[in-house]
Image (cartoon, rainbow, N blue to C red; front, side, top):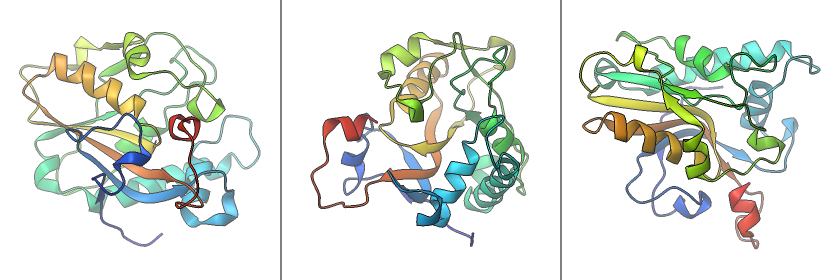
Length: 216
C-alpha cells in the first residue's frame, strides 16, 4: 500500500463512531468497509489478514499485515511527537495466559521505524478474556474499563507528555474511550491521541444505518 497521511475524526465523520466525542483526538490511515470481504479493497484485505486467528487458513498473511501496518504508521507519525510519547496498544480480547492471545497491535507498535526512539508499553492490561468485537461482543466503555488495570511496573516517573493509544480499527470507539478514561486517571497531564490503522465505514453512506450497526 502506498504512503499515506493521517486523517482526523471530526464533525463530518464522528457520527459513524458512537462513543467518540468532540473532545477526543483520533487519527486514522485508511477506511475499512463493513460487511465486505478481502477483495473489496486493499484496506479490507489488510485488516482481515491482521485479525486472523491462530490456526485459521492463510494465517501466514498475518505477519505480512503486521509489517505493512507498522510500515504505514512509521512515516505517518511525526518523529518530534514520537520522541516525547509512549505508544500504548489496545489490549486484545484474550489475556496473555489464554492460548488464543493475539498481541498483533503490540507487534505492530514494536515494528514501527522512526527517526525517534519508539517507546512501546503495554500499560493497559485486561483482567479477564472476553469475546472479540468482530465476534459480536459489544461491551460499553465502562464495562471494558472495569476489566482493565494499569501495569504500574511500566509507568516510570512522571506523566508522559503524549500518549498514543494504538488499535487496528475504529468502530464504535468503546475500546478507545475505555483506554483514554483509565489512562487519563493515571496520567492526568498527558495528552492522549488515538491512532488507528483504519476506521469502519458503511458500503452505502446514504442508506439507513441502525444503532446496532453503529455499535457493532
